[in-house]
Amino acid sequence: MGGFFGVASKQRCIDDIFYGTDYHSHLGTKRGGIAVLGKDGFQRSIHSLESSYFRTKFEADLPKLDGNTGIGVISDYDSQPLIIGSHLGTFAIVTVGKINNIEALVTSANNQKSFFSESTGGVANPTEVIAMLICQGESFTQGILRAQAMIKGSCSMLLLTEEGIFAARDKLGRTPICVGEKDGALAAASESCAFPNLGYETVRFLGPGEIGLITPEGYEQKIAAGDKMQVCSFLWVYYGYPATEYEGINVEEVRNRCGAALAGNDNVTVDFVGGIPDSGIGHAIGYANARGLPYRRPFVKYTPTWPRSFMPQDQSVRDLVAKMKLIPIKKLISGQRMLFCEDSIVRGTQLKDNIEILFEYGAEEVHMRPACPTLVYPCEFLNFSTSRSTLDLAGRKVIYEAEGDSENSLPEYARCGSEKNLMMIDKIRQRLKLTTLKYQRLDDLIEAIGLPRENLCTHCWDGSSYG
Image 1 (spheres, rainbow, N blue to C red):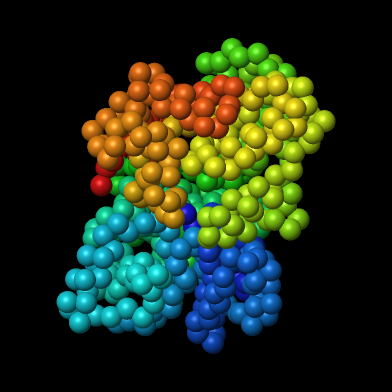
Image 2: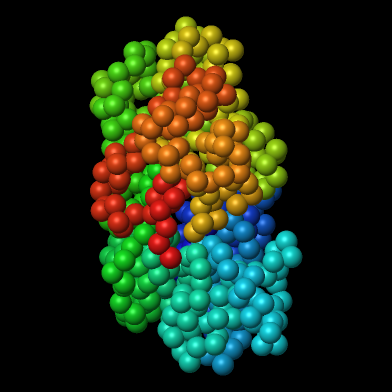
């Protein structure tokens, strides 16, 4: 997915940029970058995060960077930030999102004799494509509006300029931006959890399509928020860090409510409840509290040398690293009937390995309760599971075997409680070798988040789509 952090301060801002960006490490694994603006102009540093994590890679760069305004990014795809020279002036840019029509935008630009200097895997750098569109405007604000109007998908961004930092949320608000304030400085972030330890107080959540200018003196709204929002529901289920708030709604509280909802629809007899680390823990605590069951940790996560941000791009190595991170505790497993809460089941490969270990260690029963419905549709708006084909999704694999390439039956498989939905879930249960498998109902997930259904993107579960 990716996340960004920006600061406009009356004082040197390098430490805030460094630590604030680092607090977004759970959102990306490919690249990290920082750009600052000081008396010597723009400076930039970019490093790969595939073999280590953000702090290790950037610590040595800090003495070389100087400035009172800056932006940082954790990217799961392209190299960022980019520094662009244009008729609007020099600026640095970071983006988060997914551009579905990037090939058409590049073709159109090439027909107008434009060119792109950076590419990833033979595809133009999406952030550079966005910068190109912005540069066709008469001002930064108008350029951002132009870019947002031409993008199919989603894109939130920060622009570091001589005026300050422009913060622009994607037009349907799928990815968040919040603003924090402390004496002499303002910051913009994807995750509000970056604020407290740096002394910032969250003062604003940008609305869908909103554009603002951040300076040390305050926040100036350039374009008001639109009236239609489709914020990604998966932010609360999986992506978000427990201390983060989106739209003023805390991630951990939502996960506790998700777990309680799962418990309210369940009566299976078990000895204890556990959570698949990390994001399954909040769901499991909510489940255990709601049913009055013990919460235990038969799996613990080893983080000293396997930080969450370290996840190679090669899928086979990803699976190995994911397995290495979780250590089973045999004495808590043997002879036990256990129920686990998990944020979701995507492919199920790693989960299957974990379940096999539990039975090898003497578990009598293993029950699984994912906190969201079965993933049936691939995400069209964020870079979630970009390295996986649609048929890698556990649910779609079952559907393909039953229906072939036809997508006409997908709504029936996605409909909670339908005959095909229950068949799909049981096939997944059998493949994972679970005692029972019961998914969250979409209505319960929406209620747990607490926003109106029309304000949430639920595409990956029910195929709904707006723009």
